[in-house]
Length: 352
Image 1 (cartoon, helix red, strand yellow):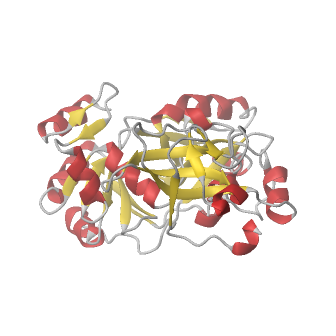
Image 2 (cartoon, one colour):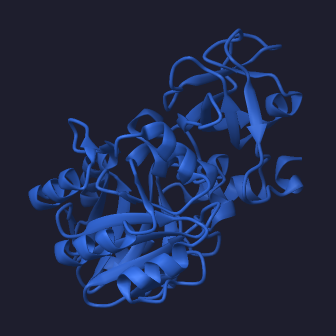
């Protein structure tokens, strides 16, 4: 995080963790609650941007990621996965194009390993890959009135379609999935400060956890260090949020992903659930069938406190165990998962 932006956030009332992550603006419980119903905005400095540029950038990324980079342009972004040769996800992120570069928006904890692996495959391609953590300041906005608030704050008309992008020389706005209209803004320091102050009139600032709760409620998975290589894309529903192309051609793990889609039987998928646990369910924590043996039937993808009590979580679970309805957190006697409705349909044929 830029020192000047850190100073700005502190003066605006942000309480920062040791890693620079915005914990809250003084009342985290209220922030989680208002995030689900009201107009809120958040600093997204706990995410980073990886820039990929050069003459061969598009072709290089096309051969690495799960989605079709030919669809990404000035007005359109896409979710993507980076997989191992076995089809297991090493990372996932949103990719957009600005200026002469492609940008990968991902958790800061995933940047070092992702950049290192991508550089291994550059070979003779005319491509440069670098962490651009201080290039842009990123702000998230969500709420029933988010479109009007963002237009008033930036002077730009926000994109009307999910994954849509609108940009000029000073700022870029992406519409992302959410239970309410939701956007990610990227801008330089001066423009970000101006936008933040304008949003602060009728919207409530919230910490990183409240924004992550919105990601969970939107059914959007985030691969973290604890879950690297734990899932293939279909297990975390990535094909249901336009994160996978089955027509683009080769990339690492493509044969495995395609075979599961067309020839295989999907035995695990991602669910949204509430769990009444005493401790935060950490990413990668195993799940168990209360009526089964001691073998894990799934893993936690991510979780955050829920304002109604307990924790909201995304979890990959064996479909057969989930349909029986008695999946437990941590061990067979742990708290039960209470399933919630995802904001997108899951085709019955895929779980048959």
